Length: 258
Image (tube, rainbow, N blue to C red; front, side, top):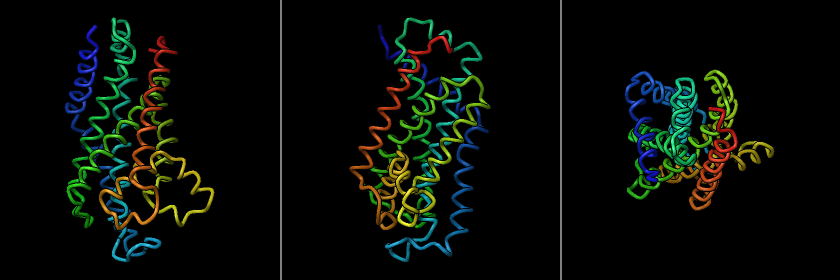
């Protein structure tokens, strides 16, 4: 059995659906951009990085967190197609086909991962507006970190989308989960100034390591503290692997959900 065909077909379908919805493209990129401009401009005058150089302003510090937020929004939008496909009857047809469950998971998650990764890479072009001009090594590292981050978040979104029947319920669950993940990832403020209980949560948050790796790749001056690149990549890889295994488990455990 050629499992590459269903994987490629489902991946291509995700990309085509995204490109055929201009409003979805615009909304996915516009919200993080507005956050970056408003928060960055509003806090620039009062932000001082603890232990860091004084020339690092908030627009520069906040930029990696904005890229991570863009990937989060992409994960929400892309995995929502699982619910839409269920209602349209498409998912039932895929599950009835002689295709391994993991191939279906791989196709859906890969499509969402590519979408999140591409949007993040495009957003990186705005880095000079924040005073960030990474070298070639830093830019390549950022691209790789975005791929891992997009994979992990899309796989996480898929696991929840498979269990939820309505897009409204999915939005509620994901907002309750993803927004706190982003707020407590070091995107808005460094962990050094947070209380001990919050630092513990931030250390257990997988998104913290994605933001930390992006910050070290793009703006080392703004990454005075926090996880190193090696630890961050290892944590992101482990997070993505766990989420992918969870996807396969929930699909095999509840195939009739579709």
